[in-house]
Length: 168
Image 1: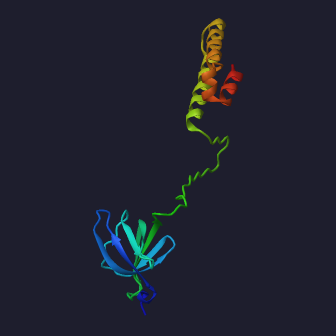
Image 2: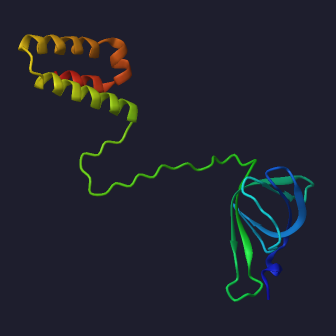
Image 3: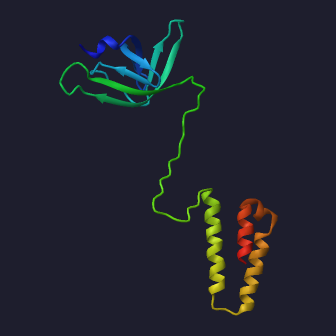
């Protein structure tokens, strides 16, 4: 008994270059299509066209293709194709995965602002450690404070500006 008896749908497969083959027996499920014909060339980036009973067609983008070979050499070998329905109004999921281990003082946010703040923190420390007269240090701090209190600077840096001003 092979997988063919489970394949009740007919689809057409379109390569990324536009070449179409079919009809091909398949099982179309949500975000997955299963096909047992090992001779087919199915490419990621192509399309699966599924005729519907109402005369229209459903278009599925091929996102990923895996071939599973029956280890016993039987007739259960098949393609498992991950798809996304082209006309779906459900947004494609996007996720950012962050893995943090054995860390302290983690800060998550806008990397650009964090880089700017980090640079200013280094600058403030460098002013404090500089081997120059105290009057020069005070002059540098006052000019930096004037820059950080400028309305445009505070608009760009937000609350980070007030943190930096507090360091002066």
